[in-house]
Image (cartoon, rainbow, N blue to C red; front, side, top):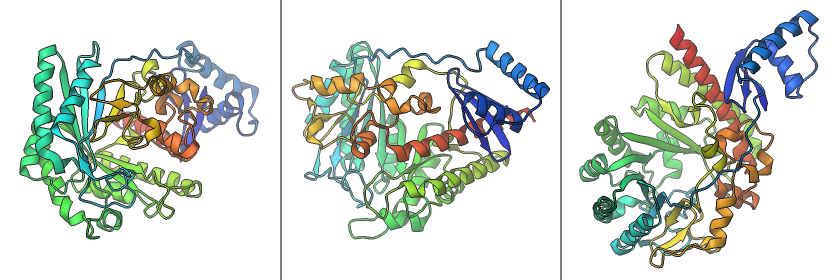
Length: 442
């Protein structure tokens, strides 16, 4: 399918079948939008002008870059498990209002995962990984650094067990950085493939939501820890992850704040919550979409000045074309990826953790609920019917199954608010891609 959009004075045509992006003039954009996207009014062009536009489009079509047929083959999902999210701790030293995990407790008891359970989870992953050589484990919470010694012991155990069977582990951790001391920094730099550090941006924004148990803002308690860690990280992966809410719809200021504080790998996610004064609602979308454009402009200005940084949501990779299996399969939750809570119970992913209707088994018996697994194994882009006419489908893959389920009642029914934000981010990302290429040519 074809998607025509403009970004200020720039006009673009995106062909979803080939994954090709073309910059064009306003006349061509209007013509293609009307004829091929069935949008807008019929342009009043001369026969010669139309012939010129059609000639250009024919050239692109002959190269397989315009109106290329979309492949509709269903994915063949593997039954080999590749990754686990280990809830090493169902407790937290912060009490963030928007926390989907009930401030770390997941609507249950506050508890730590025992070393025995964590090792059983590693055994479960290895046993069920089939021919996969590279396996992934994310230490999650709550706040994982409350259980640092357990993490150290489990990492050592996993590496030893992997060596016995010719496999390799990649580890990641998500932390609020409150306990990120020299010992943790050294361990993370040696053992963690990636580290996600939670920081919402400006002090007043962060402190309004991310509070300690005593109700005190945590910004001053974590900012220097995060800076120290980033300075020590070298070329290893990390990113600072913020969350914006209805309270800070001017979130571009928070992203730029993070960039100007020395963080060059940043994500700023919309909150997912039902808390009324924080939740992102349909009425906020026009302001949010305008703010993404504002951020896009600032982002490109930084790059042109040599102060560039990586912003996760503007990373749109069209160079490699459409990787069908990856894009159509969507998320591997509940099939190739699982979440394990402190008592060893297995859920499709961390956002389903604690919802007993999605309980799939336990690492000690190693048996997975077939019906739940089949539900996720058969879910893909093509079972998400609302995605069929969306230009972004091969980039977003139908959205998050958990968000779909909890906001729309069905893992296969995309959460509409997220969809609109996603489409805007993708358009901005495409504009960034085109602008960077032009800047390189100059």
